[in-house]
Amino acid sequence: MATEPVRKGRRLNRGTVLRTERLTPHMIRVVLGGEGLAGFGAGAFTDHYVKLLFPQPGVEYPEPFDMEKVRAEMPRDQWPSVRTYTVRAWDPDAVELTIDFVHHGDKGIAGPWAASVRPGEEIFFNGPGGAYAPSADAGWHLLVGDESALPAIAASLERIPAGAPARVFIEVAGPEEEQDLRAPAGTELVWLHRNGGQVGDLLVEAVQKLDFPEGDVHAFVHGEANFVKALRRHLRVDRGLPMERLSISGYWRRGRDEDGWQSSKRDWNREVEEEEARALS
Image 1 (tube, one colour):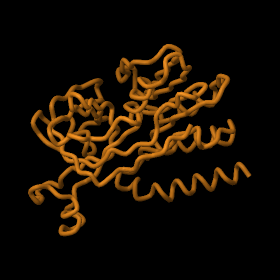
Image 2: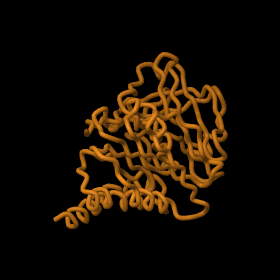
Image 3: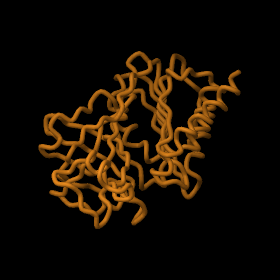
């Protein structure tokens, strides 16, 4: 059931903002288009992602923009900030790329950009990468995530074969953050409202209590790293699922920005794998 991953490439894409929409109080949709997206290669996976490049304030960059030249000739602190976001949808006929952003006021880089950007503005990005799509051979599907994984879960629901059972748990801040998602018959979708609690606690509890249907599961579990770690241990050790039936990874980690998380993610993953190996031995 595992899908061969496609890693992010060096291709530099340029997107022009076509329109924006506030989906919920804390989720903003940005639709990109323009000639710079010709040949954009998304479509095989439902967790496709791109690396958005946000210029440093007050820094002038070469024209035309060349990230390789920036890396070679400019100090590291002048390089654009990189933020990773899931492709919510890609329409190759309309040449429109949809990305959904979680927005928490002035905090961060990408959320404030999505809240203030206007049609006609441009953004550069690398990608797409990706590794997961719902397997047509699975007996049933399990999709679990917080707000950061919501775009990928929504895209995945649209690709699950009709009639294939799916159990879906999505944790959001409160009922006002729920979205109207398209899902095939056979899907049981549960919205969990955090209401000020710790991110992921409700997801861990829900999956631990879930009565697994019969048949081989194909699972997608993404979001904050600490609850992902807890669920990975539960699924691998307690439920006995092999890794080839899991797409599971931390998109972010409490107390870290993306730069800090990405720089420590490899060591984090190694520690998780070592703990898991000891538990399974």
